[in-house]
Length: 144
Image (cartoon, rainbow, N blue to C red; front, side, top):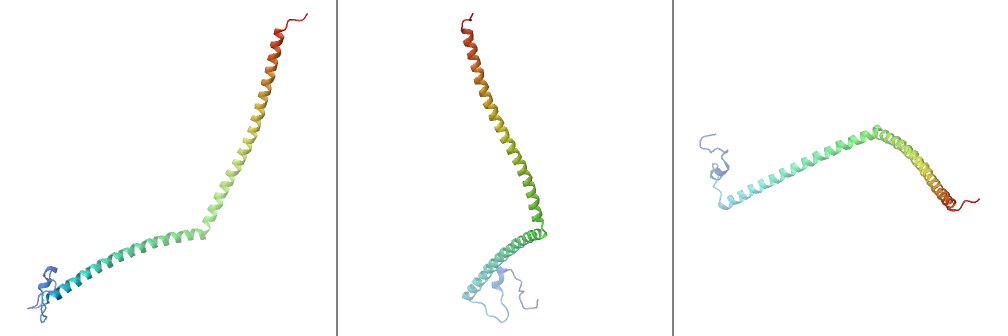
């Protein structure tokens, strides 16, 4: 700070009061234009800051996506995915064999059950015929 000069670090409210040596005071129109220009600069700076934050967020999202994609590529290149698929195929094949065996046992049991049911019906009919015969003999007079 030199003698006769006003400090340039005045609060924003007092800027209109500051005049530089040798510069004429601003006209009302110039002051309005200067205020409008400062408002536009602040608005433009805020918009640019928002855009920067948005772009930084997008960069972070894309970096995360890139990292996960690189991990997937590394897993595929290592053959780990193929090994895992082979392991799953073996497990599913074993389960399929077990299921086929169970299906064959079920078919056998179904046929056995059907045969047992038919035998029960046949035995029931035979029982009914024998019961009817016995009833007829009891009703018939004894032959002498």
